[in-house]
Amino acid sequence: MFRGSRDQCDLVMNLSAADRCAFVKSTWDCSLVDGFLSYLRLVFCLLPPFLSPLTVTLCMIWLLCLFVVLGLTASKFFCPNLSAISTTLRLTHNVAGVTFLALGNGAPDVFSAMAAFSHPHTAGLAVGALFGAGIFVTTVVAGSVALVKPFSMASRPFLRDVIFYMAAVFWTYLILYRGTIQLGETLGYLGLYVIYVITVIISAYIYNRQKHSSHTTIQNGSSTLPDSVSSDSDTEVLSSSTGSADPEYEEEYRPLLPYSESTSRILLSSLNPVDLRKWRRRSWRWRLLKSLRVPLEVLLLLCIPVVDPDKEDRNWRRPLNCLHLVTAPLVCVLTFQSGAYGNYLIQGQFPVWLLTLLPGVLLSAIMFCTTKNDRPPPYHSLLALLGFVVSAVLISAVASEVVSLLHMLGVVLSLSNTVLGLTVLAWGNSIGDCFADITIARQGYPRMAISACFGGIIFNMLFGVGLGCLVRIFQTHNAVHLEPAGLLTWVLAGSLGLSLVLSFVIVPLCRFHLSRAYGMFLLLFYAVFLTVALLTEFGKIHLT
Image 1: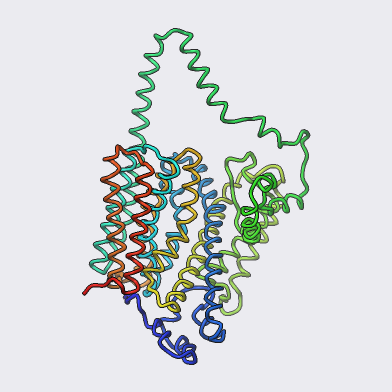
Image 2: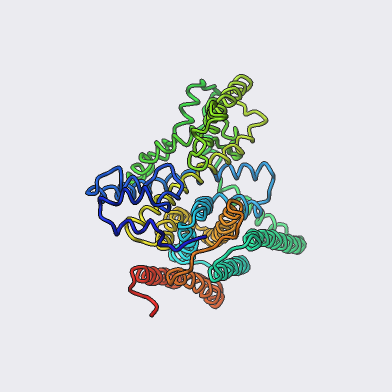
């Protein structure tokens, strides 16, 4: 059963510094959270008490690094491999957008929610993170897009997404009020997303059919126009369509004479994540951040294969891809369930990691001997599936580490899991999407940015709660009992519902035009919500 957000481990801060280590070792709640490291023992047992502020500071820096790993793995490896899989399966853009692309963008949120739901006293992190990310995206991100690029949005997709998201939030209200989640209700979350996907596909089909019929009518009418008008319009369309792409620019960086690189040179270039042309054009701040990220990117490149269907060679790198057959399965074994199977011995003698290593070396040798550097093999697309699995396992492991670290910070700083979820976890998982959507809006695509805002949070809410509770039900074979919702949870839920209702009313009244004034209103709404939430957390606002 999910206990209150203040579990037994929270009492450690009421003890003297000399008694805290023994309390952490003897208290069951302090050792429940998964993770490679026991952060509570690190703070209270391994280091002296006077170093606790330094330890908390280093843990916050480590938390920032974990968020960077989550973002890099999702954007550079998880999403491209999902795109390659959808291309191989020949899915339409609409189906791929609401399935594989949504999974790629929402992977950190979903896996963080699943990790939080896996233990009783961290469920508040999941509720706070999902609701906090929802209100952050619908106010801060949407408001920033409106400030950067005021525009008129598509009416039907906006109303569709808001209605489905309000249905998901209302369903979560009822579950929080009841305090339990049965198997049928968990499957209902997943079923609601299936209905959403079907609705998107049907609406896209109807729209394309209407668009095709209107084009047919226009073409029939244009056949009566003079030839000069028709030829001019065709020339204009042709020039506009070809002017956006400059083939000479692409040819500029291609060698005049064909040549073949050596295997060692291909391996070194494949492990170099820095584009020298981009490096020279960017600012010093970008170079500094890139320099800090390079070691992480190199390690991820060593472990996770990436298939790019847009490239001519589909990102085939023979020596590196052969190495992936060895490193990728090892990473899965060593990181699955936070390394639970890393030291597992089969019949007490044969380690699992060695059983994984030997077939990997054999398959790597076979691939290296039967392929060429300049030609991908027919089965190259299977590496996208391998990259998808490895990146998913790695994201899940890092998400569990984030939840474990946040639980430690909540105990040390005497903060509830809900407020940590709606602030640190929600901001960490959403800040990348925020900057990406603002960049898309600045490039002149604000509609795409707004669609990404609402489409992603629907997936995160339904799959985060649905999969998290489904895994918990299969583990315990019982219904999930949630902790009693406190005042902060209802402030969070009510604020999210109010923001959605206001958007559902105000945007149609403004004829679906998002102005800078509306963007400022959304940012002000989030500032007021965050102030009220923090005042509630610290006891300044309470029920009498």
